[in-house]
Image: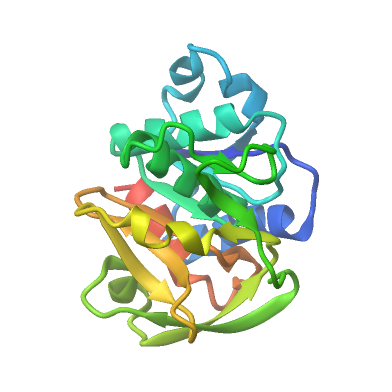
Length: 231
C-alpha cells in the first residue's frame, strides 16, 4: 500500500515549501518507500467537515508559509492528527500553529492568539520576535531521553530558520503539561522542538529541517516521520 501525506498550507513555492517535496523523496529513496503527498489548502479545512477532507491521510505535515488563508483550517488539521494518533510533523509556521492548538485545546487557553492573525493581545502565545530568525542558522541542543534525541542520536544539531514569529516568552512556562516534552532548546534556553508523549509521531520544530535534506543525506527527522507514516 502506498501511503499519503497531507501537507497543510497554502502553496506558494517558497524555498521552505518547495524543499518539502524534495525531502520526502530523499527519505523515500533511503527507506525504499513510495510515499505520496498532496497540498491541502487551509480553507478546505475551515468548516465542520474538515475530517472528511483528511480521511484516508496517513500523515500530516503542518507546513511553513504563513499567514495562511485560514488559521482555523490549519488548527483543525493539527487537532485531527493529535486526537487520532496520525503522525504529525510541524515546521516553522506549523510549529507556531501547533503551539496555538495545544494552548487552546490541551491547556485551556481558549483565546490563545497568533500575532500574525490577530490584533488581540490577550493570551498572545505567538508574537513577532524581537530579533527575527529569518535566514539564520544556529545550534539546537537535543535533550537526552527524548524521541527527538533517539532520532538524531546527537546532542546538538545545526538548524536553519526562516521565521519572524515565535513563542511569546510570557507563556513559556504555560505550555508545561505532562504530555508535552520540550526536546530541543537553543543556547539561550529558548524552545526549538516540542514533542508529545504517547503519540506515534508528533514533533514540531521552530527550524526548517527540509532545507537541509539532500539525496545523499536525508534529514533524520523527516526520514523517521516517513518511516512511521508507512508503519
